[in-house]
Length: 223
Image (cartoon, rainbow, N blue to C red; front, side, top):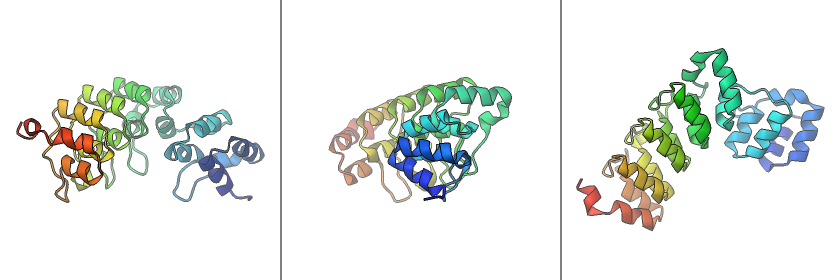
């Protein structure tokens, strides 16, 4: 296969040898775009292939500030932000901020760096999702990162498009630790999404009995 699609397929398959061979033969493919508009590096991030992302960087892939956030490269983030501090508040064409990307992909150290530099912990994505970093962390099932965001002042009840809250995401994922963390931070277990479902209903719908027991506590629901 002589098209860049071969590189994306190798990345998705986690085939390091093929990725290396293709890049060494066609270095320009490191700047190619997938059908969905992702660079090879972002493609590796979205398909949860951290080893492929590291390999691509080693092979010379260009690393934009957004790619650095998606793969959790503190070094590239620091370099880009030292050159242009306004990038801290920038958004990708798909609407996601640097902190939103690090939160979704679970890069705690990179998120800590962005927060220390002044990233807005409650800034929603500029797209139909309207997802805050905390909602992204909850959707990605990243409890330590969610804790970091809450400690930095994240709103535990910030709802995205459709009325989904971080607590509802945690309940839907069956993450009891994150559910307890959000409840302790003041998240409202009675909040309902646009379909009328609260966190308990979502836990029950997805078969998460332990989380359902936590949320069915009358002391929580009467608070």
